[in-house]
Image (cartoon, rainbow, N blue to C red):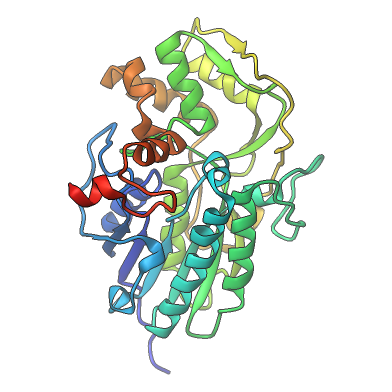
Length: 352
């Protein structure tokens, strides 16, 4: 029997985003030959130094077969990637997050790509009370973003063959420091608010549950999927996170308070219940993915944010800069004519 060839050449879509800017260097450090692909919407902002890499400047909707020549595996991160961004235009969200994802996978399979690792989300569970739920739980998406992930997962599963293997990594709510930082995710947002404003400001009643996962632990899951042999490679879906890492939003605020003493927790005028609440089990990924172990805790993540924000002297202008909030940045690009309503390059971009 021929020896199984190891995965070597990896394409990462969304390579210049919040996750990609962390995961690409991790893959390179692990010895993979990494090529990025990114549309460039967020390429101008860097909170901390960025590791340079070869990047194909491409909208994921426009991938061509030649882009995938010689690629062994694809790590597909590119998307309109949170609930507010998905609500900007639900039809466009489906076009990019669902249809373009499936089109990419079909092209990849035709080009002999062996593995497709899809960045999905625990938000597909929507609303669930009580005990932790595993990957077999009903998917009850409440937003356009979550619905797009459900549809993509289902269609990707239909493309699996013995030579084209797919797994969907259902990431928890991400936290942690990235060169392409985002302040529209809960822990960095609260930590940034504490550093800049001297208070930890909640816009809900703090009761919703969120499964949290550090960006580096998402990277560890990707590495483990690429390292696994064909027999070990986990098909289907995996919740990505650390056992015990389900927290209510008020717990997250308390952790930020421990890292930033003397910052009181306050509730803004929009405070109220949030239907998006779920606790998930991370048992399967811990037991079935060889070499994977999530290490980051909530308190360690809060301390990391407090340390980095103090070190770089995070100020209000940077905290509120559109480059670090996805919806604000896309609106800025559209208002300045760099993007059209369909998020294609606008007249100002063409002139530049």
